[in-house]
Length: 199
Ligand code: ADP
Ligand code: MG
Ligand code: MG
Image (cartoon, rainbow, N blue to C red; front, top):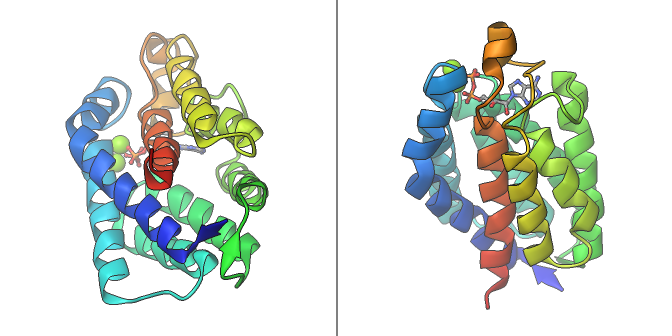
C-alpha cells in the first residue's frame, strides 16, 4: 500500500530530479521553445516542496491536489497549468483514502493524464509530455521501474516527431530531431515514483 508519506517522497524526489536536471530541460527547450522549461519546473517544484514542508496533508490525494495547486500558481507558461491539472485531477481521483494500491494510483494517474489531454488538446504522437505519460500509465500497475523505463522510452521517441502543440509547433518541420522538454520532465516525474518506493 502507498501511504501519504510515499506521496510526499514522490513530490520531494521529483523536486530533486528537476533541480538536478534543470539545465538539461532548459537546453531542450532552447532548441524548440523559449529556454525556460528547466527554470519553470524548478520554480514550481521548489514551491511544492516548500508547501509540503509547511502543511501536512492527511491523505495521498490531498498531497497531490496541494502540489497541483501550487504548480498552477507558481509556473507561468504551458507546463504549469498542464502539470497542475495532472496532479490535481490525479489527487481528486484518489479521494481521501489514507492508503492506496499501485493499481489505484495507475487508474487515478490515467484520469490525470486524460485531463491533460483534454486541457491541452494534444494526443499521443503530438510531441508533448503526453508521449512520456501515456506509455507510463499503461504499465504503472505492474511496477514503478517499468513505468520509469516506459516514460523514458516515450520521451526519447519524441525526437523524430513533428510538434503539433505548444510553442514547439510554431517551428513546424524544424521541431523534428529534438527531444520534447515536457516529455523529458514527465519522465523525471515518473522516475521519481521508483525512487519514492525505495530499493
Ligand atoms: P512554455 O512553452 O509556455 O514556455 P514550458 O517550456 O514550461 O512552457 O513547457 C513546454 C512543454 O509543455 C512542452 O515541451 C510540452 O511537453 C508541453 N506542452 C505544451 N503545450 C502542450 C499541450 N497543448 N498539451 C500537452 N503538453 C503541452
Ligand atoms: Mg518554454
Ligand atoms: Mg515560456
